[in-house]
Amino acid sequence: MISLPHMYSGLRGGVERRLALSGFVSPALRSILGSLVLAAGAACSAGAALFAWSPAPLAFGAGAAISVFNFLLSARFVQAHMTERFTVALYLRLFFGFCARLVLTGVALYLLLIPCGLPTVPLLTGLGSTVAGIVVWSLTKMSGQSFKEA
Image (tube, rainbow, N blue to C red; front, side, top):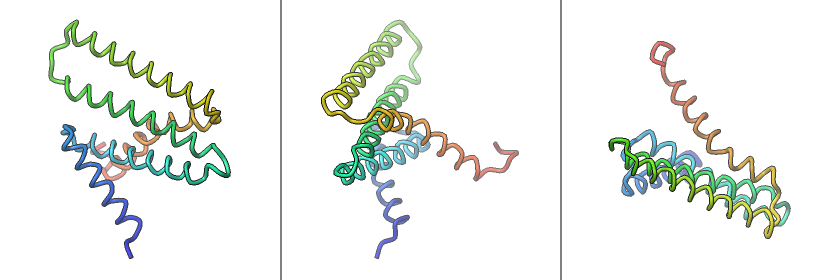
């Protein structure tokens, strides 16, 4: 029987390989994104399974998925343009990309809150899960170092 840690590491490795194939070159970024994608997927799966009892887990999963999607697109843009010189054209692409993500997020939140009627607090908590995931990832990486290295 496969243990849960082995299954998680296998899934995470697969997600990180897919991220590497799609152009993410930083191992640290792939590690963060891999963990966040798996956590959002697990939250969405659990939310779908538990929807008959409460819509809150699904709302949390939807918020987490939106947050991870936004972080993924932001990270992809920053990585692709990190070495470019900061010009007006780059600034405009950054600004309009941010505006487009903001509009898409707003439309998704509207659809989830009004027509679907999902609860607000779990949805907002799911949106904050990416920041919490990055903090947890950072703390686990720092715990492996001595105080002098940090």
